[in-house]
Image (cartoon, rainbow, N blue to C red; front, side, top):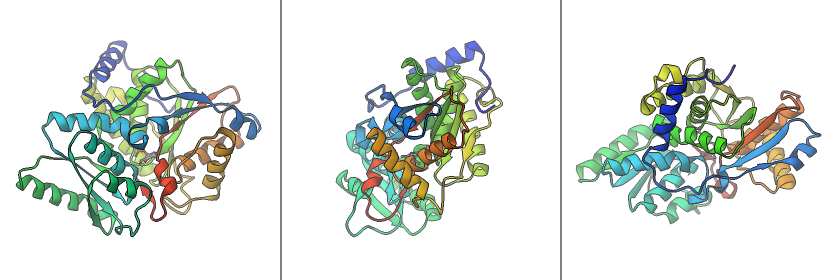
Length: 342
Ligand SMILES: Cc1ncc(COP(=O)(O)O)c(C=O)c1O
């Protein structure tokens, strides 16, 4: 069993109330559409009913899953009287781009610590970061990011600024609650799938979906197709995030995470993070040609490659409804150098 055991009724009511009351920056036009992918299903020679939830169409800052997380995280930064949003990622980070867009929208300064070299001619997310006026610092490797960010935050504070440091991917318990709310949105749309398939990387999206399923008392199988990390790393992290989310909602964390075994499949990463695979390239063109829907190379193409493989291998039942959660990342399609990153 993949989803959490049902919470007590009272706990669910309390958690839903808390989710509805979370301070939020109004960035989203909700609900994002859900539609049938009948032509894709036909191209795959039948199989389960296929739906897609279009968080790529969130709109703000080119959309994607980071907008749901940052709507909550930025509200906390404002509450704390901060004047600067700081975060980290690689040169083509979707999360960095959305953070820069939120900061601009709120009249805040944005500092990004990115691993990689400054691009000669910025493209994709790097181009958008520049347009948004973010202050960008480059470090050579992923491992240097947090230390550099901490040092910069200290320097800013010494100069009288109030920086708010957002960890990688905004995958904190607060950020992840954006996806618990998203499950409420899905249920209000009248959609209760048997399976949800989505891209997973820093774990917040999957943690939020799993917590939301427990809170809204729906029990789909939730399959996170990894863009990089193996299940041994991601699954325990996701579990911990879900437990911590309980604390923010006034329900016992262990109850929210009860019997939770996050399902993470790293079989579609290929040669590495951001490296296209034959299956991810096929998924991108098949979905574009059958549905007119674009997938980004790093996250959603690999997640869709997973869904397609599962259908072809008969790993879903034909009577099931499988929902693909499109998590955005589309500026990555226009990146001429480097690879998008969380
Ligand atoms: C487009 C896109 N999809 C999926 C993910 C994975 O989400 P998470 O980091 O919450 O696991 C990310 C970021 O890492 C992303 O940018």
